[in-house]
Length: 297
Image 1 (cartoon, rainbow, N blue to C red):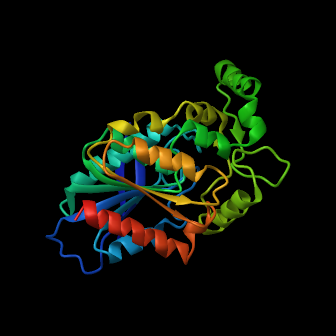
Image 2: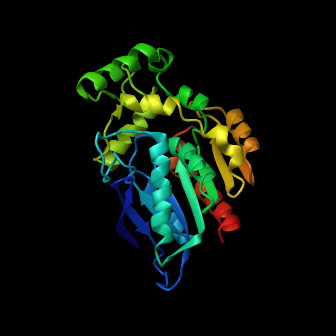
Image 3: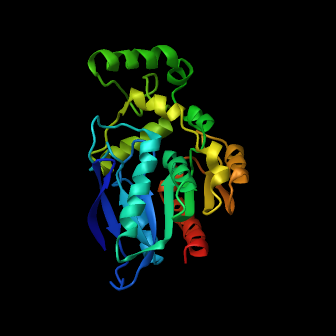
């Protein structure tokens, strides 16, 4: 059963869905998983499949769009400021804890790709979170660097300073494509990323192939790995793809080793985007469910 929801976040409104099991007793407060997508993506793409599987296992699920994306408020559109995205997660937690059918003492976070780092950071500073699943995550600035278009990342001064000057002089907002055919500038280079996001465009017509250039500044400064040792109150599961071209398994092993609480790494012989389709979607969801059953139920 899915219902539309909304909640305030820093003066704007985030919108999403609350998923409850079909056999849910309205008097029962459920353990709940709060979810949002990775870099630039929106809730309609793949997340319903994950949420429905969590429902089938007895969990409520809150799925939402970050501010500046999808159905949520915010201008300019397609702005990815990691600290603000972490605030959106924390405001989603606050909303969830106010609902009679959600057990505020049993809150888990789930994030995929770029959102894996967002949920790790949000949980580090929010003791209401008891369990985190970071799926094929970007957890450090160094890992983000591998995901970015090489030229745009290696030569940032001219690119980013020109954008800053334009914003200062006229308020102009400049954009970089998220993905593009080979040879064109973009944030996520490579055919694998391009094909994935072209599927996103089909599943979610409100997805836009762009991100503000200012977002790159904020992303470069974001490093949840530096704080992960403080997360002693929440159990962290990291699901890794062994053929991920955006980060190495070894770097994720390091992140798990640095975690302040219970932590585990699982790895699979797949690429970064394979986890969004069966059979791997079911495999990684089952791992997440096992983790939430251990630490939320």
